[in-house]
Image 1 (cartoon, rainbow, N blue to C red):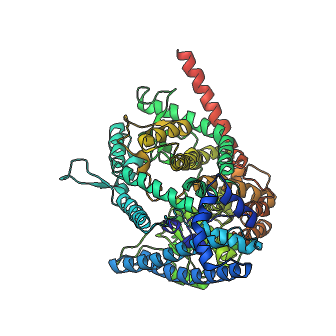
Image 2: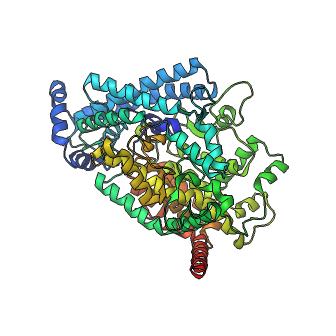
Image 3: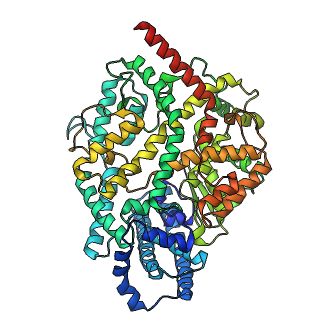
Length: 636
């Protein structure tokens, strides 16, 4: 059982409460989901004793149950939110204990309510009642089996896996040497250009995972049992049932989106591979083979922007240094946030409440330790929104502030909704909104707010686009394959005997990468990525990477923009702002295709927007790759 979204960010009540609540289509969808792929009859038989003891369920009882559940969750969330906020801002043993106690109480309540919600299965209910019951039933990322001993075992395993990952260290000189944490190894992966050092660090971090394998295999057995008791074929089917379509339909949708972006990824990949081959030699990076995973600047090869200096084009200077400009203007952390607020108010959205400025954390305190990871909070599910971030006066944090405030404005927009609807339309929407807003931090926008005097010529865009693509486009196959691997594990297609083989088959197939040294089933390389031992679904990040560009394109169209999409900023356009606010206010009260249509006019996710955005870069990459191919052919 894991309410894991809280650990990343607190977008709103339900995101804090319910790790993976997405959307369902009311009673008809509830029946379809539970029946899909078998298991429903078994689940109903197991739940039958409870139903018989409680008597035949009625519509009135279902409504009363939902009202009680929302009231209870609202109260417990406020208590847990306050404890977690204090713990994140005043890290002590006592605050950790208080936050853990509040979390445990909240988790217990969600578990109990999710189980009780099954009492109303098969009952014809009004839309809102059916929808909220389904959200409750899908609330737990990993539902525990009903057997008390197995429930206790699963709880211990999930806590142990998460804790062991957090304590993971690489001790290169044995027990007596200095051990390195992940935080200490990541800068080496980002900055070193010594392939042997990179290989040593990569292997060192991945050496923490083999002890997780046996526990993870047992977790799969117990998690699947809990999912089946809830009426799902397996845990993967439960995860995929959160997207307003049957589980297999969602898997097909992910593949469709991937195929849309694959040509763009292949162009970026081909360019990156031959540039790395020039840097490290053809013996290490063959021009017709996979890229060694340790050379891409990131422990998991999921983003490649750290190797931008090896790949940047000759004309890559945008003509300004935003970090330098912000420092020269003596910008402080609060002014950084004012810039972000000014972006949203220019769209016609309301200013941030006074309590935001009084209660947020903008600067790392000198007298205590705090969690500096940027996050957007809404403590009371209404207007008590806050930003927690140790802001640095840099171009990167300038964009991050805009991104985070996107979450806060989403939270305020859906605050009038009932408790169980206070979340984004699906779990990709929240991140996508923040990222779509950050896409409007363009040179044109910087000129509008008087941070630069002149917008650089479009010929300078290639460097900006390449750097962004090394984050956004390079991530796409990784964002897709993490859950693909887990879905295969949960279904039994991949067994513990071939966990690692299947992991690297997917990474080579989709990313085109290979491990820096031979691997075996003694290794458990999937476990070296936080989201696997922490049991955090990953499809949301892939969806967010797609949706942000679809949102951006729609908002630019609404604003009447007709130039290159990467040049568009919606700053100051109230028509685009009204369209944005309309979608945000829906929360998860309606199926996500309806929310998507409210903003974009489209009811399907469409990755062609990312193709449109990076069109100038794609042309440039294809030209560079073609020229390189001609040079290589002539040399031969």
